[in-house]
Image (cartoon, rainbow, N blue to C red; front, side, top):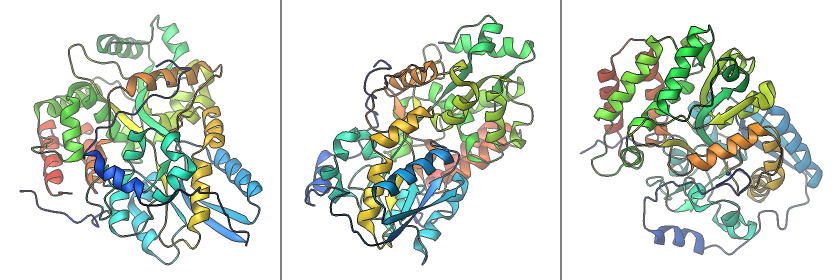
Length: 450
């Protein structure tokens, strides 16, 4: 038996087609979802908007998905459409959001709109504490059920007590989708006489050639914590069966982290460091510094999420491309990803209707077009018809990734992001062994039962 930890312990098939379905496994029978969607009468989020002066405050993640300038543009467009509404954006670093949002949401000055992940890290505790409102009554009338695929919406559903993820009411909507992929520099590939790798053997050979040529093979920077997680999960996805990862995420029977596959991924992560394939002093530099290094043409690859596509596209333009991390021969294959951060309505908001309208706007087609223009991947069904080869490569990679998606590993428990960040940093810094890493993650996992 696992000891129950309180949730309150939170410290395109072608590039021109519609974005494919996000294949996140269902964790309950369909009646739960049907019940959640059937009760409220359909009501558009922007119907009957009040005319009195209103100030709407929202939290937003800075440096992820949309640029600060892009966010300001959308805020101005919303206020032009609804001149009685003053929108106040509060930009926050992602690490700050994960560590402080629940406390801020429970305080007297809670923002009207919160930004949250799915899973048990952020959304579950907010739902359990009654700090966010269900969005069901606006979903049908606003077209959200067709704007997004069901698996996208399912990652923002929770039982009303916060105990079950993927079922029950809808509590948030995402503007962007994300997956962990391989960014590459076309000029450096050409300089080395290489093609975009499609197999693990080709990928490893290209790392060796880059190092021999004095080029950083893999840009990396994890001083800000959470980016280090994907230095492990991008390898785990190549080694550990999809079913095993999903069992861990959704707490299926006999789920465990202490497996030979996860141990193999940990050993490989350490070996890549020993081989000198990452940026020098990657543990001591930020993700921003790693992005700058890659965007300046000083590294061949960068493994991270599409939430960083904007600054990379700004720096390298169509000289950058994106693909999936090449699979290993004969191994199972998954891609970490799904909808990005979602917007939710605080239960303390005095203007939930206005908040719902704002969320509708920020996750709709007007916002998506601006987002794609910055190099981003929208969560809504979207047809890209532009000429950017970088954006086409990203939609192409997404078409492949979406066939075998698994949720972000840290979504599995409220404090797993903190645990993974610390333990993977220790692992890559040779402070603990791969065996110790697997055991310590397992210990943290077994202390929580949803």
